[in-house]
Every structure is written in C-alpha cells, then in structure tokens.
Amino acid sequence: MSSRITLSVLKADVGGFVGHGSVHPDMLEKARQTLKQEGKDTLIDFFVTNVGDDINLVLTHREGINSEKIHSLAWKTFLNCTEEAKRLKMYGAGQDLLSDAFSGNIKGMGPGLAEMEFTERTSEPVIVFMADKTEPGAWNLPLYKIFADPFNTIGLVIDPKMHDGFIFEVMDLIEDKLITFSCPRELYDLLVFLGASNRFVVKSIYTNSGEIAAASSTQKLNRMAGRYVGKDDPVLIVRCQNGLPAVGEVLEPFAHPHLVAGWMRGSHYGPIVPVSQKDAVPTRFDGPPRVIAMGFQLADGKLIGPQDLFADVAFDRARQTALKIADYMRGMGPFEPHRLPLDEMEYTTMPQVMGKLKERFK
Image (tube, rainbow, N blue to C red; front, side, top):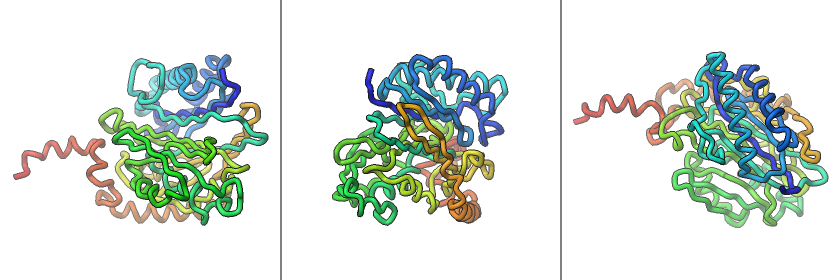
C-alpha cells in the first residue's frame, strides 16, 4: 500500500429526477451510506454530489490508481443507487451501467473515471470539475487555456516554476491511442488535435518534471455501447498553486463560455454554463450543458471543503453570455450547426429513422 494519496472521481447516471434534470436525494443518501459502510477500511475520505442527473463520487485513499478495491466499491455504490432509482421509478435507471458483472476495473463499463496519485504538498488545493449534458472534449479548450495560454495563465510568464511549460497527454478516442506533446515547444502540433474535440481529448497533463497536474475522464459511452445511452458527462481533476496554475487561472477559461457537443439527446451544440451546484439542474431543452467546480484542500487525504467555486457573482456575466448563446443556437432547431453533423449522429437514435427511408434513395 502506497503512502502517496490517490484522488479518484467517478460518475454515473443511474436514474434521473425528473427526466434528466437532477438526482433524487434518496439516491445521494444511498451513495453516502454505501461508501461509509463498505469503504471504511479502504477510504480516507469521500464526498458525494450531483450535477444534473449524474451522481459524482470524490474518493481519497492510498490504493493507487486502477485499484480493484476502489473500483469495486464505486461499482457497488452505483448498483445500490440504481436499486433505489428503480424503487422510485426514476427515469433511465441504471443507464450508465453497461454490464451486469464487475470485472475488476470500472473502465469500459459505463461510469466516468478520473484518477491521479501524488505526494501531498504542504498545501494541496485541488478543483474537481463535473459536467452534465456534454462529452470529454468539453475540457480541451479550458485545459489548453489553463496550461498553455499566457493570456489566461500569467504564471506561464512570471512564475519560474511554470515557465518551462507542461506536457499534454492526448487520447484518440476512435483508435484508442495516446500521444504526448511538450508545450510550448509543440503547441501548434497540439492544437491540430485539440481542435477536433469530438475525437481527440486531453487525458492528463504533467509538469516537465513528471508531476501529475490534471486528469480527466475520457470514456465515450456511445462507442462502448454502440448506441446512444446518454452523454458522457465528464469529470476533471486539476491541482493548483505552487508551480501549478493558481485557482483563479484554472477557473478563468469558464468566464468565456465555449460551445460543446451534447445538450438535448446528446445531439446538439450549446454553451457550457458555469453554475453553482444548486443551479446544476438542466431543464431547458434538457440543458444547456452545465459545469460545476468543487474546490478542496487536501489534509492527509481528508477532503477539506468543498468550496462551490462557480457560485462567485463574478461568473454572472458568463452565465448571461451563455444564455444568449443558447437562445441563438436554439433558433436553428434541427439544422446544423445546432444539431451535430451526421457523423456525430451515428450513435444517436437517428440511424433508426434513416434506416426506414434507405430504400427510397434511387
């Protein structure tokens, strides 16, 4: 067992209240009870919350990443929450659980997962971002700004500990391959891929000395299931301060809402809206996409917090901008570019409609 701390963030949609908007309080309580009882010998600490219809588990432990104990505990938690969802007749009960049996690792089984292992510093501030009604590529633009754009992160210019830049690990979701880029030297090469956020996503970011700085979930539910079962609703962990971007630098990209894929039926582009946890209840056209930011100080693995970082009134204007963008995009209805292009619609229910008409093409 390692003396290093492991921070694991797992999410799953196992039933929506009402429709796709939120999670019933009884389901969240079931998650807390399960983690408290079943995790007492393995967890240091835990925190349970939701964004939209996704249950999010923040776990600290010393078992390392890809731990069967931890993944099994999370799987059991989501199963128990599913049973509660079925009892309450929640919508889409268990939809993110793509298998009936746990196989030792939660990867590829439906739930989203971001993990990192590190030695806790004298002060260890971390931010856990959680999104709903979008996909893993939603983090590409913010992570580029946080770790590679000096107009966002002044520390890249004036902090000698950050001046050498960072290493981006990028995943090809279709080929299931990884490539790394050292920035700023390979910045333009990096942007070739990050701009195609439906296929290439940032998996993790390291300092040039090899220290983990950020980790995201890269699961694509539709590619695992071969059909549309809901958007991936990704999570992201970012460590802050002391040679890493400051908390304010990490939050700053979300002051300028960008367009992400997802929203209604996972089939539309829309702005990602930074909100407090209490406002993470997407109902307008099942959206627009939401992101929350939970800030913690780690103290010997204990989660001190959270601070609800997007509750700051300084993000009010970002929210207003996002709502204006939402009005504009909605005005296009079923037309691209509000609706996703056809190659992205492949994993929605649209092919079933098109299949009925294929014989009419002459």
